[in-house]
Length: 83
Image (cartoon, rainbow, N blue to C red; front, side):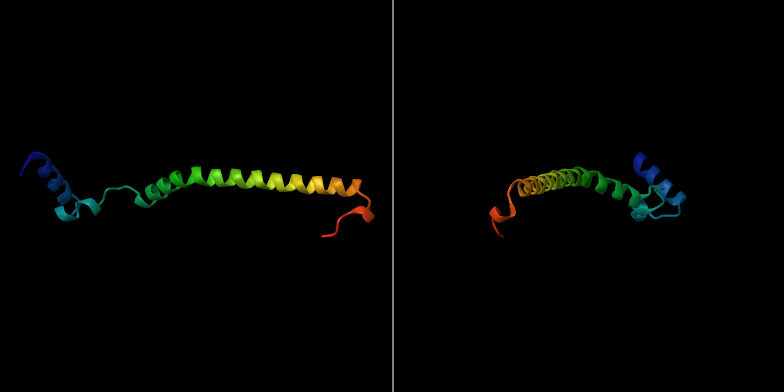
């Protein structure tokens, strides 16, 4: 058995694992947290882009509402278009 494989096998036995289970045995890593962090890292830029676009649209809609309100103040009720 080559040296590196002998070490892996010996380490596996120390944790009470068979060599075939070595990948799943006692690594001490919190894989759930690692996966969540990776997913969030990939998701964040896209979410930021969507949030920025939404905020820009909200400002545009609000600005149009303010323009309409200003026009309503300038145009007498009798001359305003209906609808």
